[in-house]
Image (cartoon, rainbow, N blue to C red; front, side, top):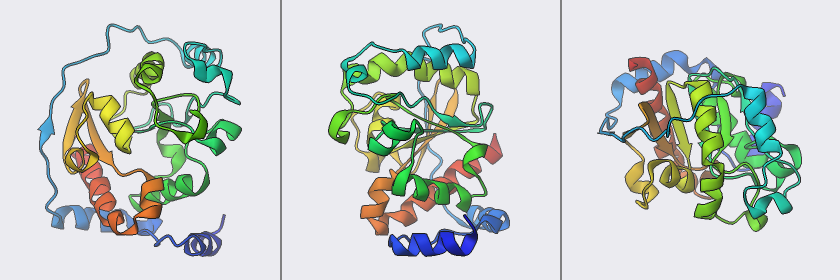
Length: 234
């Protein structure tokens, strides 16, 4: 999609345009000027000695998974897409209807906004690895059940071991609470650097929420800057 068409599409959806792709110098200046929180919340490693297997093996396991009842209603599993040696790992909560149909995470309007959020800090979707807590869609796009997240936890851990990201972006409340094993509200989790098994983790609002709450996009931008600074300082 060319840039004018992309801008028209975003405007039609009522989405404010994020800072353009040539924003790397702008990002650096904004980071230097911003007073971003850097509180680190440390978690002990919880990888449970899972031995990393090859990508093909993990993807085949996910494709044939029957650990929970979601396997009975899915169209297909949604394993993840992007750079498998990325510095950034983006983790959402669960596939929705469009993701279930296409087999890719973060498509549709929320996916388009996530793409723009990444471009705002100089990243393309192919530069990062994107996946979800759940690999199958919960019907009605309801919140994942704890037992469903637990069924998928080993797959996500294996993905994290294989990617070896420099930072994890937890997208939305469910993702943040599941990864950090907490029931704290998202407002208290964002704005600081957490640590998951030795990897820095930053929490951001879900793009679907930002589409409904445009005033929160400024906070999302601040969180993205915090993530950029964390990677640059690593």
